[in-house]
Image 1 (tube, rainbow, N blue to C red):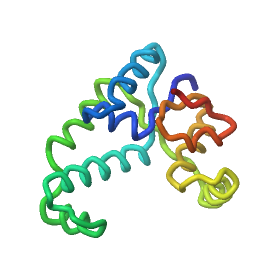
Image 2: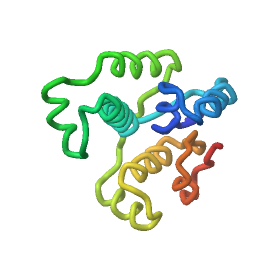
Image 3: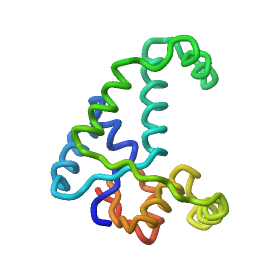
Length: 150
């Protein structure tokens, strides 16, 4: 499979103006001739992180355990749901099925010294033959089968 994998932090920096937004946009432009891929793990992280940051900014979330209650009571902000959907559609991102067994995840997490979600992402790329990941996460540099950009 050709193409590049887009990590959570690239999407986040596109959705929200940050010091890395310009770089994230340039990366997407530089690779616009490639097929964009991501995974459910990334969409999961993106939905959670953007919602958490929103509720922290509004002052509703004061601690790490507030999110469960906030989501149960208020749900996910519509502009976040719509923004994520629109971004994935506009970029024509293919959401890859994660076909990773728990034993492989544990083994590679230990071997590569990665967080579990990053291990799932790395193994998903390996499974689909994707060798390039757009990410600001330096931890992926420890993955021998991935070229990390930038």
